[in-house]
Image 1 (tube, rainbow, N blue to C red):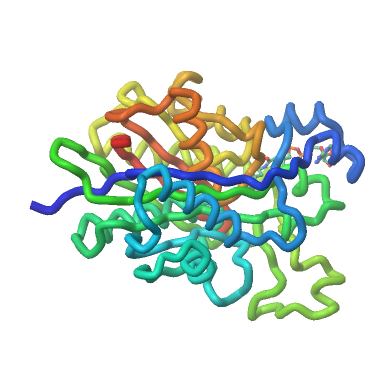
Image 2: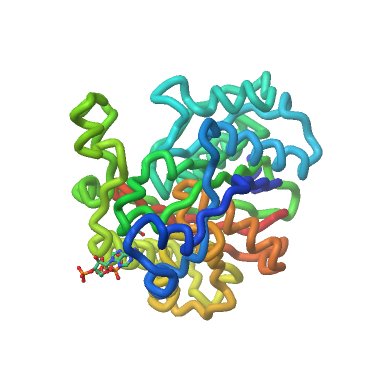
Amino acid sequence: MRSGAKISSIGVYVPPKLLTNADLEKMVATNDEWIVERTGIHQRHIVEPGVATSDLAAEAARCCLKRRGIEASEVEMIIVATVTPDMMFPATACLVQEKIGATGAWGFDLSAACSGFIYALQLGAKLIESGVHKKVMVIGADVMSSILDYTDRSTCILFGDGAGAVLLEPTEEGEIGFVDFVHEIDGSGGSSLYMPGGGSLHPSTAETVAAKMHFVHQEGGAVFKVAVRKMAELSETLLTRNELTAADLDCFIPHQANRRIIQATAERLGLPEDKVVINIGEYGNTTAGTIPLAMNTALDRDRLHKGDTVLLASFGGGFTVGTTLLRWEM
Ligand code: COA
């Protein structure tokens, strides 16, 4: 009989440098009260110059391997979800592979913005479930500070840098692991949240840089509404088709974009606060990093235990939406 797939270890890393709301008050016309009330964010971690996504990803991966007690050479595959790769190519997965010494691994990057980690998780789980691999490393990592305009108060206050890595392995006797998922993309939302410059449509030139096309552009209000509606809708679909209700869930781990988005989604699902993991206050929105960082926070706060029924939900640029149902087996 084929086995299922489970998360067998986790590691996270955020750079030590903090960017607080007080720091931002000195950079743009904003204030701590506005940021906390509208987003729930108090601080973000950001890299020093010269530190890239692969550095954060490699640190998270090392921590994940250490927790599991295995060598990097045992990893068969590395998927890095990111929208801030070190370079257009090579893939950040290749850079991470070299940095951690995962000499037996193949891999690639996956671009799905804030849903990247959940999408990569499913790919990795399917490769375990199919029997192709026994150890897949899935990493969500972003250095959002590298693509933010720190003169635009509507975007620069939202994001931070960070990474999380999980190891996927076959389930043991009696374990369940990954149960089901519902994913959706909607390209009609593309221009509501995007970085227009630096790709093949608008290769970087002095003009694209002068026009700030290498920064995140966002219609915040539009993104907010769709995020709440779609995360709740896909979560409902996933629960219903697995004959579950919100009452059956032990832990809801959503993408951390805005505290109000998380609370509104949880409210629509009928989830009480004590089942919802929120750590956006400490990290801001780390894009592909938020879900593993929130998983780690849930473990640290003793809110996640072996056997728990867990729902993951994400929303991001694209638009991309992801939901995953799993039994926590760590
Ligand atoms: N500090 C102070 N005022 C700010 C501000 C800031 N950092 N950013 C925007 N404002 C102002 C606006 O200019 C506007 O002023 P005006 O009414 O004079 O025009 C006012 O605050 C209200 O702006 P609005 O955009 O309506 O606020 P909001 O309540 O929608 O909050 C976001 C803005 C960006 C926080 C919110 O829309 C959001 O979080 N959207 C989703 C973003 C997201 O999650 N993206 C990632 C998805 S993965």
